[in-house]
Amino acid sequence: VITYNTIIKAFAQSGDLRRARELLAEMQAEGHAPNDVSYNCLVNAAVSRGSGDFAEAWETIAAMEKSGVAVDHYTVSIMMKAMKKARNPAPVAKALALLDRSGIDICSDEILLNTVLETCIRHKELHRLEGILASYRNSSLKPQVHTYGSLIKACGCLKRADRCWALWQEMEELRGIEPNEIVLGCMLDALVCNGRVDDAADLFSKLKGRVKPNTVIYSTLIKGFANTHQADKAMAAWKEMREAGIQMNTVVYNALIDAQARVGATEEVAGLRRAMERDGCPADGITYSTTVKSYCVK
Image: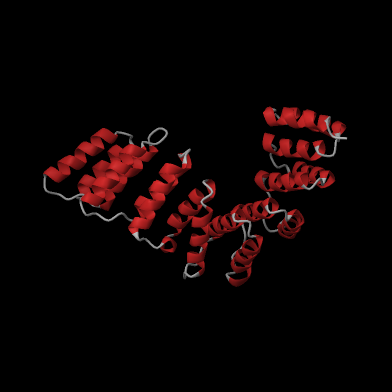
């Protein structure tokens, strides 16, 4: 079985799904029962091909269950990760039903927990997120820093800034985990999206010496300043970025232009457009529409 699985995996990783399926059939014909590794290789190869061959993946899972091989956390994680490509709720519901059917404790594996959280956040499965967070609170899981980021993001999606802070304190004070740029970015985004822009700015200021800021962190703060008509603070953040040598992008400039456009600061908008061009950041539809908006504010 190990030899067959090794060859199946090689075919699957090379994208030759037909040969991998043929080898699985040969394996069965020779009296060697495929195991979870055999089927998971095929499932992963199917969802990884092009835009994702979900029909092939589900057919393999059906064969897996029919043969009496239990779906495990790898199977569910593979399907959940693949749901990032899904554009409608039907396949997401099917993947979540697979999770329910498997009976797997979602908090028994951090990879599974993260992939399910990301899928539910992306597809606004709010009721499911509530259930996952309740399961986490009742579990003995001691998450790594990146998992705290996913949990905080989920609480932000549910408009529960209080829970975001509770998780942050659990991570930093109870567990003694040092925040990194990923979890800080998640926390700042959760605060900004819930109207806690000043709290986000205070947290950023407090951690600036411990966590190296990046483009995403600054763009989140600038977006918050734009939403609350704090154009001066948005420009101050931009100047900090330039002094620190942090790379600019179109998203950052669009947020900066939006901050100035909301207060009708047309000269500042023009200056930002020139800086944007100098930094090699291409203007997009949002850039143009926001620039026009600056001339409509009185």
